[in-house]
Image (tube, rainbow, N blue to C red; front, side, top):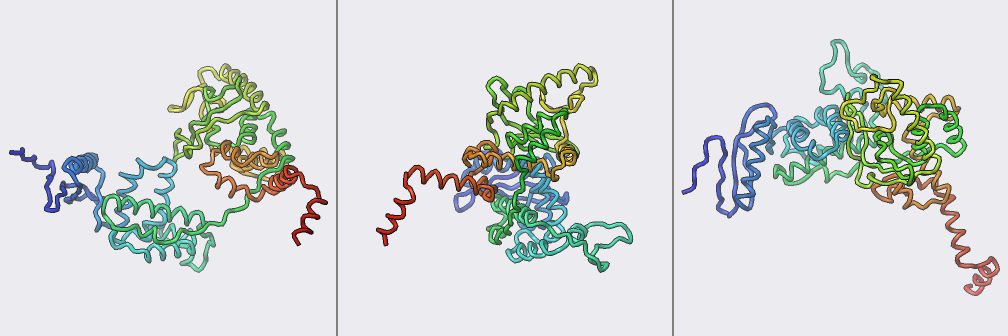
Length: 423
């Protein structure tokens, strides 16, 4: 005779249809307890689900039910599921979008009653409303303060098309998890069309502006960083997370394998954006020379700083680019530095990310093929490279057409005579 499970351990039962189900008490997001069921084809499968559910309960993580409010489900999803699937920066942005926009508008809807019309109406209202009123719709406001539209004035600040697309992505991801847990039968956010985004035309620096910028940056202690960003197209977080062990100055190569980002008040080191972002890049000779000089300058700074050279806790050993006391550089600080450099060089103001676009544009102008540029930049697909830089590929496409003429070996007279025969 099977041993009876103790009180609180949950129950596992075989159903009439041959499947198994288990039940146990779990926490709701509001702190109360309820009985929840899980299902499976075998007893072992159900036992694993039951153990996972009970472990979450022991940790105080709430469980979900199909009748719970959508806002409560989002709380559960962000606390129990999303941290295991999303990178910290993505999770941080999802939490912000949920708190500011999604929960105030859809939070009171029941999860199993959420409809495509609810999502469609929400997205329409979201992209049409001003940000001031969206953020203040469901929050405590100081006494005497009202939303701008309520007092007859509008801030005229609308969510960008990209923000609307991100909000839609959060809804799709959250509801897809609800399907996996058999809480709902369909993902209503997938039924609603994804909002289109009109890409802004990239405006990189031209060759003359780049030369002026680098000439101005030459005395800067981080000159090697600016040269590297322009020459290799690294993302700023990738460049600031480089260590000397990632660089082979003799072979002239650089390995990208981590990045650094500010998440709330902390600088977090993690893996790059995509799998293809982990890559090896060949360095131009100028970069090798600049990095060699930078290493010598860093050793002098370390000697001058002495005991004040204190790397930040958790940062990798041997960072290439640091503050004068050996600490990791905040990625946001690079934008302020670049603004000053652009002003001093008398070139138009650009973002650090625009140096990445500048690298791609310079490579295209030199006739480098799109596949090589994709590998250099670490794009996930070649489509992304072609879509982003289609507007600066004119000279490259013209050169390709001229090379085809040379390959065919046809002169103008031959072409004209052949045209005559065709007619």
